[in-house]
Image (cartoon, rainbow, N blue to C red; front, side, top):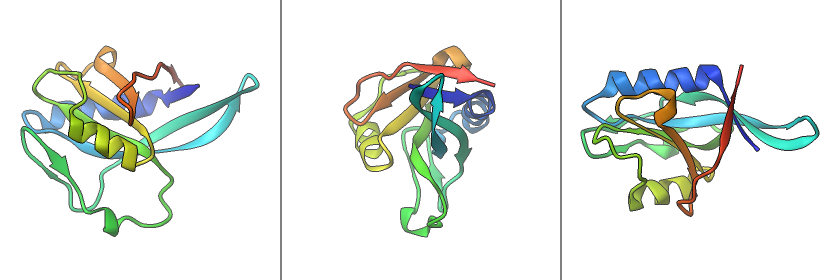
Length: 129
């Protein structure tokens, strides 16, 4: 089961709004946990990666500058275009960087946040306090 902390969802919506009309890109930190006896991944925060470079159509960073202490489970980014569909580049990034990818589009509200894997398939999630 994929769980998102409410504070992470709030950070994603705020980052999308703040970056608009450009994209935003962040790394997801989290931890494996058991919830009600079920193995789960709890995503807890978004980290702004070093060397972040964004524009209206793309975003990138310098992965070799990341500290080894980051427990990276995936990526997050915004689509100012309004499309919630992952591009080929989005899927490639998701498959390299932990396998989970969160994407948000305008108007940057929690209901516009989707999760998917590197294969492009949507992943259901639950928002927790």
